[in-house]
Image (cartoon, rainbow, N blue to C red):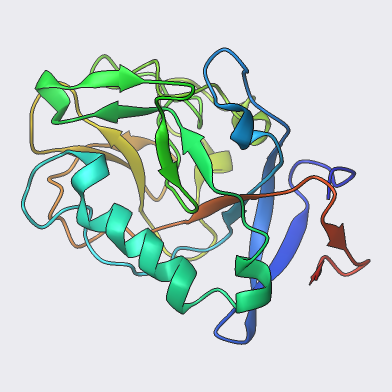
Length: 215
Protein backbone atom coordinates (compact mmCIF):
# COMPACT_ATOMS: atom_id res chain seq x y z
CA UNK A 1 0.00 0.00 0.00
CA UNK A 2 2.90 2.38 0.67
CA UNK A 3 3.67 2.54 -3.07
CA UNK A 4 0.23 3.88 -3.97
CA UNK A 5 0.17 7.56 -4.93
CA UNK A 6 -1.98 9.99 -2.99
CA UNK A 7 -5.35 10.12 -4.75
CA UNK A 8 -5.27 6.46 -5.78
CA UNK A 9 -8.35 4.31 -5.24
CA UNK A 10 -8.42 1.37 -2.85
CA UNK A 11 -11.41 -0.94 -2.41
CA UNK A 12 -12.53 -2.34 0.93
CA UNK A 13 -15.63 -4.47 1.33
CA UNK A 14 -18.66 -3.11 3.15
CA UNK A 15 -21.19 -5.87 3.87
CA UNK A 16 -19.59 -7.89 1.06
CA UNK A 17 -19.68 -5.14 -1.56
CA UNK A 18 -16.52 -3.21 -2.56
CA UNK A 19 -16.55 0.44 -1.48
CA UNK A 20 -14.09 2.93 -2.94
CA UNK A 21 -11.63 4.74 -0.70
CA UNK A 22 -9.06 7.40 -1.60
CA UNK A 23 -5.47 7.42 -0.39
CA UNK A 24 -5.28 10.81 1.34
CA UNK A 25 -1.86 10.44 2.96
CA UNK A 26 1.10 8.11 3.26
CA UNK A 27 2.98 7.82 6.55
CA UNK A 28 2.71 9.90 9.72
CA UNK A 29 1.60 13.44 8.83
CA UNK A 30 3.66 15.02 11.64
CA UNK A 31 5.40 13.01 14.35
CA UNK A 32 5.28 15.98 16.72
CA UNK A 33 1.46 16.00 16.60
CA UNK A 34 0.42 12.42 15.83
CA UNK A 35 1.07 9.26 17.79
CA UNK A 36 3.35 6.68 16.12
CA UNK A 37 0.27 4.52 15.54
CA UNK A 38 -0.82 6.94 12.77
CA UNK A 39 2.03 5.85 10.48
CA UNK A 40 0.47 3.98 7.57
CA UNK A 41 -1.70 4.42 4.49
CA UNK A 42 -4.62 6.76 5.18
CA UNK A 43 -7.88 5.90 3.40
CA UNK A 44 -10.99 8.09 3.18
CA UNK A 45 -14.31 6.89 1.77
CA UNK A 46 -14.82 8.52 -1.63
CA UNK A 47 -18.56 8.98 -1.23
CA UNK A 48 -20.57 10.00 1.79
CA UNK A 49 -22.47 7.40 3.78
CA UNK A 50 -25.34 8.15 6.13
CA UNK A 51 -24.22 7.34 9.68
CA UNK A 52 -26.55 9.79 11.37
CA UNK A 53 -26.06 13.17 13.01
CA UNK A 54 -22.85 14.39 14.65
CA UNK A 55 -24.51 14.52 18.05
CA UNK A 56 -28.23 14.55 18.71
CA UNK A 57 -27.64 16.12 22.13
CA UNK A 58 -26.49 19.36 20.38
CA UNK A 59 -23.17 19.28 22.21
CA UNK A 60 -19.91 19.45 20.25
CA UNK A 61 -17.84 17.01 22.30
CA UNK A 62 -16.42 14.69 19.62
CA UNK A 63 -15.20 12.00 22.01
CA UNK A 64 -18.70 11.63 23.49
CA UNK A 65 -20.60 12.21 20.24
CA UNK A 66 -23.08 10.02 18.41
CA UNK A 67 -20.93 10.10 15.26
CA UNK A 68 -17.87 8.74 17.09
CA UNK A 69 -20.02 5.86 18.34
CA UNK A 70 -21.48 5.40 14.84
CA UNK A 71 -17.97 5.08 13.39
CA UNK A 72 -17.15 2.28 15.83
CA UNK A 73 -20.37 0.53 14.78
CA UNK A 74 -19.51 1.11 11.10
CA UNK A 75 -16.23 -0.79 11.48
CA UNK A 76 -17.86 -3.64 13.40
CA UNK A 77 -21.03 -4.00 11.33
CA UNK A 78 -20.12 -2.95 7.78
CA UNK A 79 -16.42 -3.58 7.15
CA UNK A 80 -15.76 -7.21 6.33
CA UNK A 81 -13.90 -9.13 9.01
CA UNK A 82 -10.74 -9.67 6.95
CA UNK A 83 -10.26 -5.95 6.27
CA UNK A 84 -11.34 -5.05 9.79
CA UNK A 85 -8.54 -7.22 11.15
CA UNK A 86 -5.82 -5.07 9.58
CA UNK A 87 -7.26 -1.60 10.27
CA UNK A 88 -4.96 0.08 12.76
CA UNK A 89 -5.98 1.18 16.24
CA UNK A 90 -4.66 4.73 16.26
CA UNK A 91 -4.54 7.82 18.45
CA UNK A 92 -5.55 10.94 16.55
CA UNK A 93 -5.19 14.57 17.66
CA UNK A 94 -8.54 16.06 18.64
CA UNK A 95 -10.30 18.77 20.63
CA UNK A 96 -11.25 17.17 23.93
CA UNK A 97 -14.48 18.26 25.62
CA UNK A 98 -17.02 20.87 24.61
CA UNK A 99 -15.77 23.32 22.00
CA UNK A 100 -15.66 26.56 23.96
CA UNK A 101 -14.21 24.96 27.09
CA UNK A 102 -12.23 22.04 25.69
CA UNK A 103 -8.54 21.53 24.99
CA UNK A 104 -6.26 20.22 22.23
CA UNK A 105 -4.98 16.67 22.68
CA UNK A 106 -2.08 15.33 20.62
CA UNK A 107 0.38 12.42 20.42
CA UNK A 108 -0.14 9.70 23.00
CA UNK A 109 -2.99 11.76 24.47
CA UNK A 110 -4.93 11.49 21.20
CA UNK A 111 -8.29 9.78 20.83
CA UNK A 112 -7.99 6.02 20.44
CA UNK A 113 -10.08 4.78 17.51
CA UNK A 114 -10.11 2.77 14.30
CA UNK A 115 -12.33 4.98 12.14
CA UNK A 116 -12.56 8.74 12.44
CA UNK A 117 -13.52 11.97 10.72
CA UNK A 118 -10.98 14.40 9.31
CA UNK A 119 -10.37 17.76 10.99
CA UNK A 120 -10.40 21.29 9.54
CA UNK A 121 -6.61 21.35 9.75
CA UNK A 122 -6.23 18.04 7.89
CA UNK A 123 -8.26 19.32 4.92
CA UNK A 124 -6.27 22.61 4.94
CA UNK A 125 -9.17 24.80 6.03
CA UNK A 126 -8.49 27.76 8.32
CA UNK A 127 -11.17 29.29 10.51
CA UNK A 128 -10.92 31.43 13.63
CA UNK A 129 -13.16 28.98 15.47
CA UNK A 130 -11.42 25.76 14.47
CA UNK A 131 -8.70 24.18 16.61
CA UNK A 132 -5.45 24.58 14.65
CA UNK A 133 -3.83 21.86 16.77
CA UNK A 134 -6.14 19.12 15.49
CA UNK A 135 -3.56 17.69 13.15
CA UNK A 136 -1.50 18.55 10.09
CA UNK A 137 -2.52 19.11 6.47
CA UNK A 138 -2.80 15.76 4.66
CA UNK A 139 -1.08 15.51 1.30
CA UNK A 140 -4.33 15.01 -0.63
CA UNK A 141 -5.56 18.42 0.55
CA UNK A 142 -2.25 20.30 0.54
CA UNK A 143 -3.14 22.34 -2.57
CA UNK A 144 -6.58 23.37 -1.27
CA UNK A 145 -7.51 26.97 -0.67
CA UNK A 146 -7.24 27.63 3.06
CA UNK A 147 -10.28 29.92 3.01
CA UNK A 148 -13.35 29.39 0.82
CA UNK A 149 -14.48 26.69 -1.56
CA UNK A 150 -12.22 24.10 -3.17
CA UNK A 151 -13.41 21.25 -5.39
CA UNK A 152 -10.70 18.97 -3.97
CA UNK A 153 -12.77 18.69 -0.80
CA UNK A 154 -16.05 17.74 -2.45
CA UNK A 155 -17.56 14.28 -2.23
CA UNK A 156 -18.55 12.84 -5.63
CA UNK A 157 -21.79 11.63 -4.08
CA UNK A 158 -23.21 12.49 -0.71
CA UNK A 159 -23.18 16.29 -0.75
CA UNK A 160 -22.06 17.80 2.55
CA UNK A 161 -19.98 15.78 5.01
CA UNK A 162 -18.98 16.07 8.66
CA UNK A 163 -15.55 16.87 10.09
CA UNK A 164 -14.50 15.97 13.64
CA UNK A 165 -13.74 19.61 14.47
CA UNK A 166 -16.09 21.36 16.89
CA UNK A 167 -16.71 25.08 16.59
CA UNK A 168 -14.60 26.24 19.54
CA UNK A 169 -16.57 29.48 19.73
CA UNK A 170 -19.59 27.69 21.19
CA UNK A 171 -20.78 24.37 22.60
CA UNK A 172 -23.25 23.26 19.92
CA UNK A 173 -21.81 23.54 16.37
CA UNK A 174 -19.40 21.28 14.48
CA UNK A 175 -17.69 21.84 11.14
CA UNK A 176 -18.78 20.23 7.90
CA UNK A 177 -17.70 20.46 4.25
CA UNK A 178 -20.28 21.98 1.92
CA UNK A 179 -21.16 20.75 -1.57
CA UNK A 180 -18.78 23.24 -3.19
CA UNK A 181 -15.86 22.34 -0.91
CA UNK A 182 -16.19 25.24 1.50
CA UNK A 183 -16.85 24.71 5.20
CA UNK A 184 -19.78 25.51 7.48
CA UNK A 185 -20.53 24.85 11.16
CA UNK A 186 -24.12 23.70 11.60
CA UNK A 187 -25.65 22.47 14.85
CA UNK A 188 -24.48 18.97 15.73
CA UNK A 189 -28.02 17.59 15.30
CA UNK A 190 -28.24 18.78 11.68
CA UNK A 191 -29.44 15.89 9.50
CA UNK A 192 -27.90 17.16 6.25
CA UNK A 193 -24.19 16.17 6.29
CA UNK A 194 -23.06 12.66 5.43
CA UNK A 195 -19.98 10.85 6.76
CA UNK A 196 -16.75 9.97 4.96
CA UNK A 197 -15.06 7.48 7.32
CA UNK A 198 -11.26 7.48 7.45
CA UNK A 199 -9.03 4.66 8.64
CA UNK A 200 -5.37 3.72 8.42
CA UNK A 201 -3.96 0.42 7.18
CA UNK A 202 -0.38 -0.84 7.57
CA UNK A 203 1.99 0.37 4.86
CA UNK A 204 2.90 -3.20 3.92
CA UNK A 205 -0.72 -4.22 3.22
CA UNK A 206 -0.95 -5.97 -0.14
CA UNK A 207 -3.15 -4.25 -2.74
CA UNK A 208 -3.71 -5.88 -6.13
CA UNK A 209 -3.52 -4.14 -9.53
CA UNK A 210 -7.21 -3.22 -9.33
CA UNK A 211 -6.87 -1.56 -5.94
CA UNK A 212 -8.43 -4.38 -3.91
CA UNK A 213 -7.03 -5.03 -0.46
CA UNK A 214 -5.58 -8.54 -0.35
CA UNK A 215 -5.71 -10.24 3.03
